[in-house]
Length: 259
View: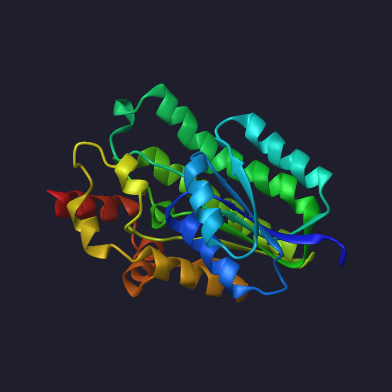
């Protein structure tokens, strides 16, 4: 596929992890990536990012909760001579409140964006992925155990983690490697939407991470073909605890710490 343009496709590129990943890929590759496709709802933010990047950039100002947006990307892949070297699924959102307090639209859009859109993008990109390509899916440490008050978000991220871990051995035979990124709390715009009425669990604020450091580790882990990328020793300890200690007991501890 030497005559094909080599592309990196990144969702959630208007801010946070997606934006940082686009910037990192832009400066990390000379010949391995020719152009970057950036996907997000806010066109002006995509334009600002595109202006700051050195590579050719293609903008997709679409809402991934609309199924037609996936068709738009699929049609672009079909029309162009593209070899997808990176697919970074960084788009997602959550609502930190009891499930009964969420709206029907929030419930629908969270599943659609965090699970359905991510899965369909993998599906439509796979035929265009080449040997030694990477898929990077942003899950969360919330995927490690149930999260009352964050129930649906944690469930969607458990799906992302499980899907990624299953796809990795499936796709290895084709030279495609999947990494699930499981960051803890980080200083991104995510919490502008997620936190309602300042009800974010107090103990989690002690574990906030620098999003640039999270992305740099995720990038390194993806290049090393690691199955899971977990930033910070505290989040790695949390991962181990969720494997060793019954979740019911951990939930009681979390409830106590938040009081």
